[in-house]
Image 1: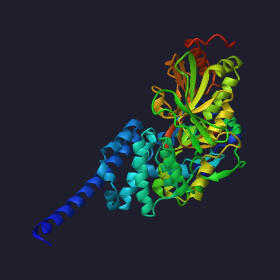
Image 2 (image 1 turned 180 degrees about the vertical axis):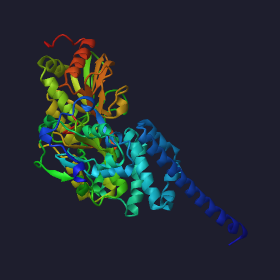
Image 3 (image 1 turned 30 degrees about the horizontal axis):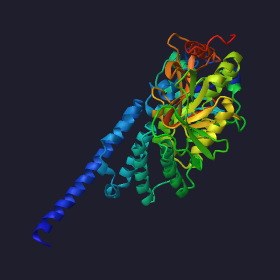
Image 4 (image 1 turned 90 degrees about the horizontal axis):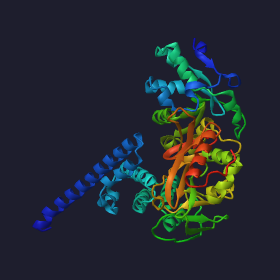
Length: 300
Length: 195
């Protein structure tokens, strides 16, 4: 070993170790930040916590150098960040990167695979999700249609229409920009949605008006759940939002939430379903319909 | 003495959970906030459940901490279901009586405390809970058994919803409660009761 090598080698080793220790410190800080944000139920802050990590903290070399606990912690915090920012493809891919490190160590269970796949599906990275699902068949994950329309890369009101057999998801743009429209945002399987639709069906005038002007939107890409919701809402169509960002001004995380639009502009909205047999909520639907010019058809 | 401190709330004859608690969403930690963590876990472990609703409670822990009669009554009332609520829920597996202590046996204390503290009541039924740590801490069969007892599925209709919690908010003008579901990582929501 020459004179320079004799000095450089320990320096490089020290730098690598310092980098690794710095990465672990940032992981610890980011994990604490996520826990704190979760306690406060500050969802936007949860995703921001992951911003404290550097690109190099997730390099293959860095990941290999972390102890198991740090890798687990990194997986959990990135998974939380991805969960609350489902549109963010880069976060979903980071979760996959850490998952692969867990798998390399033989520490990835089906539950970890399921969470990684669900993040990829939420970010609409379908081919990446399918490929992981193929490698981890025990993971409980949604069935991904064989044919998925590409649609536009950007723009408002973009959705997927999932076929009855779950084999296709066609991309389309909803015509919400003209005339009066009602959008009901749901989370598949939500009991309050079941109460809401029962309440609407009990009000024949309302049901009739809504039937012609309403679409149901969910953020959740789950063909089986969408099929159940299509049966529940029929003949009102049910679509899966391509991304949350395609519905600016909408909150796709609460169910049910009703939006009343005129020429693409939200004039009124309300969330939840009232426990007075839906009477107050039905009144709000009437108010919303009136504001967008569809009132007056309900005899009640 | 301990026997004397057991309050049996026969579901059929239970007084309706009227007034202050009706329609309100409350976590166990909210209700038992005046107790230290260990005592909260002890109080919850003394419960017996029928179809996911509280059938009896042991209030010895509250007495031990010197809670007044009125405060004890208020806490116990928060866990009550009305007979109508209880009757309206038909579980998939038929009527079952379960002892919470038996159900939680073997669960690491931190996971048990996290889960029990997060249990959210609505009209005497457990509608959602934080389940992430519990799920990581026990085998899948035990996890399934706990959920089945605390949040049993309805015979038909909506089931458990993962990564979601039940939400309820009172109208500003004192009107009815608005209920709904919210995406919430690591939580489980019983859609049969959250409606």
